[in-house]
Image (cartoon, rainbow, N blue to C red; front, side, top):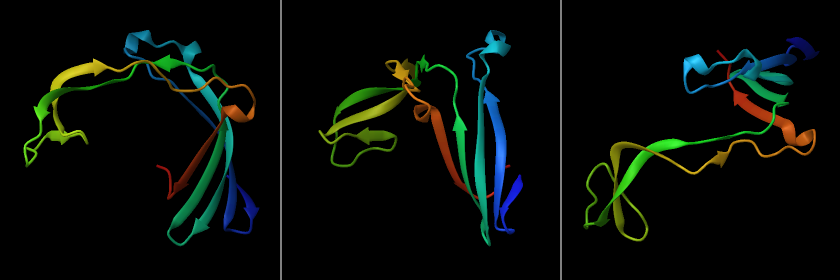
Amino acid sequence: SFPVYRSVLRGAAFVDFGQVWANAGDSRFREIEVAPGFGLRYFTPIGPIRVDVAYRSANPSSLPVVTTKLIPLGPCPATVPGGTVATPDGTCWTRSNELAPLELLKLWHESRSFFDRLQLHFAIGQAF
């Protein structure tokens, strides 16, 4: 980090990188994504307030999302049993031990300009 204004405001330059694969054997070094950025740290008595901006240069990607499968139980009784979720229409649902893939979700929209690829991060407190 470097000083910007007295001892209360500091700047930071960083490079963030990483990737997630379904299996450890699928990892490929060339698929690691890199995002350079900069940030400001304003120091308060309760800890720093951090604002970071990074540039995501990689292409957009779509990945499947997997979640716990919900099973409809039918109309809800007057008192909803524990572990059961009631929807506004009065249907009770419960979770099963099965996993269910959701439709493909686009995690990053297609970037058309420099500004579309910027990622903002705001935090209060020290990063560990």
